[in-house]
Amino acid sequence: MDNSRVFKMSFASVYPHYITKAEKKGRTKEEVDTIICWLTGYDQKLLQQQINKKNDFETFFAEAPQLNPNVEKIKGVICGYRVEEIEDKLMQKIRYMDKLIDELAKGKKMEKILRI
Image (cartoon, rainbow, N blue to C red):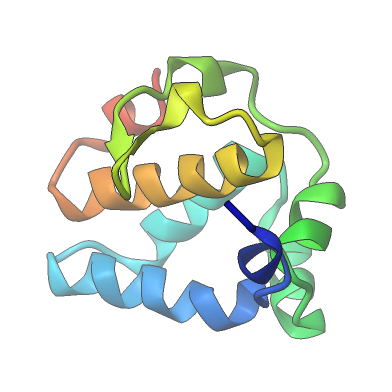
């Protein structure tokens, strides 16, 4: 599978979709940001800078301060693939984010989503 198209997508172009998905289910932008910051190590200021720079996913994750050490606890299926079995590390990180936002939209408590 050629993932280069996904890798070159601007994070800023996908970010509003994450928010919309969450808000349609009664969740908030702040919760989306909390999840993204938990996963990537960005703080709110650095996250906003990434959005403003319109960096692609490849750059977004390459510049991420630190992937959360609890990512191995993220399990399940997203887009037909088990996130824990995705071999391409960048695609796996993107799908981790998709999975966490999906869990938020499905009404999971933040403690469960953040694997606390």
